[in-house]
Length: 447
Ligand code: SF4
Image (cartoon, rainbow, N blue to C red):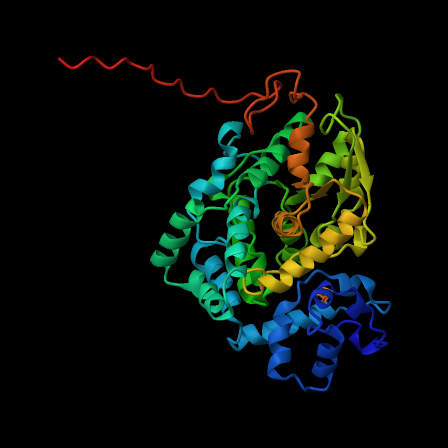
């Protein structure tokens, strides 16, 4: 376990751990001590699934130890012994059976790109990653939080049901359930693509052919399955002639740029997160990028994967500083020391603890005086939106893609020109013409 033998027992990892802050029964140092003494009891084994794999402990440790790796090692042992909890088994089964994190039909997942006229193939592709699933995740977490523990356990097994039933229940019922607000996630993806286009970066979108990165296989310790899945994704992209990937999803970017290679799946794809590409070009871009009609105090919440896996902390700030009428404020924990707001995959199984983590983070963000919280991760948006609703935060929680959509230089300003419907592109962007509506025919009077 890297660096662990030099542990000073200083407790820095415990003090920094966002899971421990929300639930003091989780104590990383106690857990690691019991591994060392080979006294891992059942409750300690179960608690390793609470770790969000956010790397905050690793970032804070003065000796460079990697407590997160110890958690991963215990998960690998549990996975090998088939002792993973039901929500983990369900998530792994979803990827194995459908190649997706949730068993949803393709149509609602690709609808966001309908009016963007994106080519279906090309050397540079945009991967939507987890964003199209985020509204359903939001709904699932909300439902899980409203259930009593016994029902919650049953609910956790839902996704692991036999394919026809799960496919039927989830793909048909989820999009129709009340409370699924697709708008913010769809706008984030549209904003990402339109901002790239405005800055001269054209991308293709694979639609229902887009492969899922399979990050849960890594996070839950199913390393062999992860390696096999990663090889499949890399081969699939190569077969389609893809040489460069741009994605707004930190999980997808982290997988392709870091975790695949760490797992020994080498590839020559160029992988960049959206903020990297936008930050590189927006500084010298022509036109005024402007958010709204008045100055707004904005706090940026660094997603842990963006900051600590991809090391992208200056880039989102460079974008926010370029956008006029934004007054950027930093919470106490920001940049490489940012706080994780998600559960690393335990959001549906342990909603209360993960919601608490998000609430604590939101409190820090509100303390800056922010009227708007911007982040760059679909799960952060899901969790912070829920926290904002529970805490009655009147401001907006927004993905940086959605902010870019509102700030595009040629986007219409309220009050100057008639607003276009959401998702309709600025004037410089070509869109496919909408099919003409059939002319209304006056019904003939009955004879
Ligand atoms: S990786 Fe994050 S959640 Fe896991 S033990 Fe470290 S600080 Fe806590």
